[in-house]
Length: 567
Image (tube, rainbow, N blue to C red; front, side):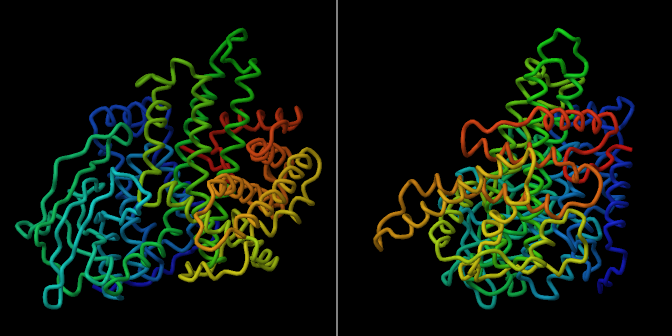
């Protein structure tokens, strides 16, 4: 079968129409009559399965087409759009987002990056026909024991014999194809092989299901291999190219995965807002409580910060190919921390209801359990921090930002017409750091309520540069100082601040993003993590709270796009 090139409209208007259709089909999460509502999703979670009606809907929507490049018949041409589409699914159920789709993307992206044209077309045909994929990425030394297992592939004629086991593979039993990384005598290599259902008696065995606290609907189980035959056509890229291939696709997975996770945090904020609105005047959880108002405003601002960083990290894969590895690592390192803090703050407002497993607010507890599982994988916080420490050592010798025209497009939430993904393998040779290089100039554009926080970012940038110069001047062969980790934290926050400032500079002419209140509060949230005493003006906070309530009433998302949801 030959896959035809998809010539459908890829404009921003078409993207918004597609997201609106998916949101409409999924319906109102809080509607008790909705077969895809929160009560049905909670019941499926209790049964440790994905909601069948939701899977059928995603089949009808052809969600798999979002993971297939347009030239192969799919709809994938902008990584930021992939994150926006999947937010609609993650907003309802992270297990559904992971179990139905994200795992297939994690697998297929390796094929798009390293497969032959025949392998790419076969994979596109499989996904467009509704098939599933699963993957066993290599786990770096600084990773986690839950996923670290070794596979070995021994040459056998023109193919290989695969042995070993992976203890935790999402969707292994339902996968029509597996992408696996295994050690060979010539180094780690990647392979594409049929899934367990298509390889009976071939030395591939499914292990018992692993129960998890979060994303309970995902079927996570191990796969064992005993002299499993891999013929020559199963190798992706070249023998020994597995490490390079895995590093090559990390920018394509780190940033997009965290962008999708914002859908979970959106639901948490929406649920908490509903809870606060339902309480009478004297309740400490009501909107008349300063603590409650502050928690809602801070959560909204944090989601905007995360979305700005997600936007930059996903669009950099198209526009800043030699910098996207570092930006993806920043997103993977920083966003889970911010979102975890956000969930903790919101749980204080909910009180005992934060632990409810059913009822009107039960979806919050499910979201709080699911959200940490989205970041569990081979590109964890430790691996991402190692990338940032490497950047700290290079920062004193790096130049400034990219040219204004090239960099401006990185910050535009609705900007279409991007070039194809262009991840560079020689990222360590990049001579600039565009986000850090743009910070000082962008800060000059932040007036009004944003000016004090912008000034803090500029002063902290000087501290970062001085610390990196000391770090880079260490004697050759000496271990990197533990201070490098603190510098990595500061660096990640400054990149997030630069992302917010860049979005503010490139904001559309009207709408909420043209309101200076959001940039003032967002920058203050970043600056407060760097320096004590940073305050938000009362006027900006009041404006942000009004927006939180308006978006709740109007059923719109708490991100840069204010997408209409569930209608």
